[in-house]
Amino acid sequence: MLVLGFQGSPRKKGNTSFLLSSFMQAAESLGAQTRTIEVAQKNIIPCKEYIVCEKKGFCPIDDDIKTEIYPLIRQAEVVVLASPIFFYNMTAQLKAVVDRCQTFWARKYKLKLTDPAKKTKRGFFLSVGATKGQNLFEGFQLTVQYFFDAIDARFEGGLTYRNIEGPKDMARHPTVLADVEKKASDLIKPLLDRKKILFACRENACRSQMASAIAQYLAGDKLEVLNGGSQPADKVNPDMVKVMHEKGIDMGFRSPQRIEDAISRITPEIIVTMGCAEECPYVPGARMLDWDLPDPAGKPLNFMRQTRDEIENRVKNLIKELI
Ligand SMILES: Cc1cc2nc3c(=O)[nH]c(=O)nc-3n(C[C@H](O)[C@H](O)[C@H](O)COP(=O)(O)O)c2cc1C
Image 1 (cartoon, rainbow, N blue to C red):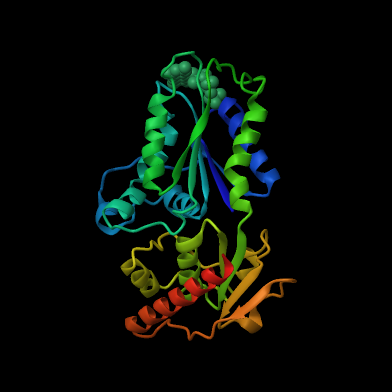
Image 2 (image 1 turned 45 degrees about the vertical axis):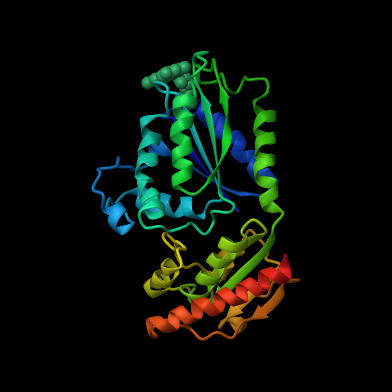
């Protein structure tokens, strides 16, 4: 379960950095996996309004957003935006990230695709400002709310601190550590208690991708879903993406990975194999299920559709049995 944090201040060891890293430490100590993006250190080009995303669902600009940040936003189940207030909003560096997420907005509202993690994805913000103004965080919050809607995350509010100016002011705040620990626990604990299930196949390009996305889409609030392959392909199968998009489930920004990597930090309680039973690593105590489904790669599109529907039926039955 990934918690992804964006540190939006250009000041490396300032207040926002302290606030976000305290939150991430609390999340890790609860058992979550965390990743922090130092936004000012990244190569992020502001949106150029090419509008390719609204027609094709992807952004043609080649930078860290495309190669690193889109896939991480998709993978994360908790996304945290952290920024100091600069003129009553987030910093320009963080706003550039938000604007480039128009790609997610377009996939959702123009292409009518749904993130398979929609049931669980949560968004939360952290902010500091120097003054005591009553409306200090309103501009940031409004932008954040629309951002979280675009990435299909449920808005979970924020922690905000006024009267914070010098770079060490946040660290001296009397309640900050207790505040972030409470917020991290409220947000993350329910997600860590889910049953863990791994879907595996050989290439992690078709069958296990479809099964994991369908399971997450239908029951992500009850199941933590992993996927992997014994011999991962370079990219997911475009026909698989097409037939899943026919069902409205967004398979964008996914890449095949090794089974060992999928389970390196989380031990699944159930493992469903599809054509890789002999090559699947032994996980003590895990219940093993082998679904005998032929590989649809390279076969006609209709065969991919039949495989998708068969997987959907099997996933639905499994969910009924498990929860
Ligand atoms: C360009 C700029 C604009 C700012 N605008 C505001 C503002 O509108 N309201 C406010 O209360 N503080 C404002 N500040 C102060 C910062 O929000 C404050 O110093 C904060 O603690 C910096 O956090 P950091 O250490 O994480 O960078 C501004 C600072 C800068 C550099």
